[in-house]
Length: 465
Image (cartoon, rainbow, N blue to C red; front, top):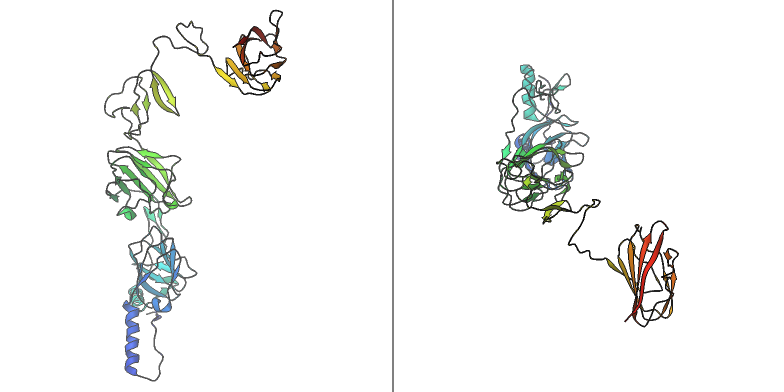
């Protein structure tokens, strides 16, 4: 039989009360064989066990984790049991100060082995001799681990077929599914009755399928428990919409990355995959109920228009209303249809019984004005300046051939006009020299001649009191 190392603290021979020495020694032996330590590791920083704490055999770690942590153990070869009784959506690993160790899932108890360098998960291989198995049992009793040809006796056997792994390795690879694949970890939590952040229903940590219901249209902004590669199926088995909100309000690591909100209507579902690189749930698949655009059961009407419905949560609903379609920020409404022909922008049409309201635009009081050729049919200018010069600049915009523009000026004092070169008078109507003043109103009507690029004066009537 191989030699084992007994890692139980012993007393140095000396004088004194021998009864006390023996009792203390047995207490230490008893603690090393079956001592149970309950220790809080709450928080988000690593925790190092003291030599006295390490002398126990069974360890229960408790508390709420706020980050991924490691419990650091001394580099003494031994077997020990760990119970991860923590809460919080984070991981707990057990390792030496220089090792990588083993991650222990919340709510589980595992048998671990420290080989003096790092911590490993343990199983007993059936390939060893009786003597080697006896050494393994001895190792479990005294806290050491026997090696044969530098290979630990307690290790995981090699895995083949659908899942592969090397002997003693914690790294497994899913290769194939040789039988029908079933999602069996489904839960049906209590109804969601409010918009919810950091969704964490009972049973979520071991669930693969969430069967959800709501009492109305409700927002879900994130789900806890995301670890690299985890897949969740979210099904809306209720009667109201469930909206998965894109990157909103939940703790960052629990949010969805969806490129826009996703609404799951009744009997619809989503396949979510957790991306640890971006620390977000991503949409891997989506099931929408299409069916009929209005009722999802009856036959659609040929040529009908289908729109998104936020009320029913269905992808489509039948467009309603009779008349002309009107879009406001992408949302359709209707206006009453005219009884006659719809007027086009470039059609040759004869219009009857129509009134066109002129566009009247005021010009600011000042010593110069710029009429608005593109946006007005008539410009009005009330001038309160002292007697002086009123400069009339070329109208703004791009006029069209034959366009008319009325200029109405009411001045407190006489203003001498200084006309821009684009204005032109005639033998019959020369351009006015000055306004009437005395708070009288003067009218001038101009007509645009595109051939000469001039605003020609057609009418002038001054002195309205």
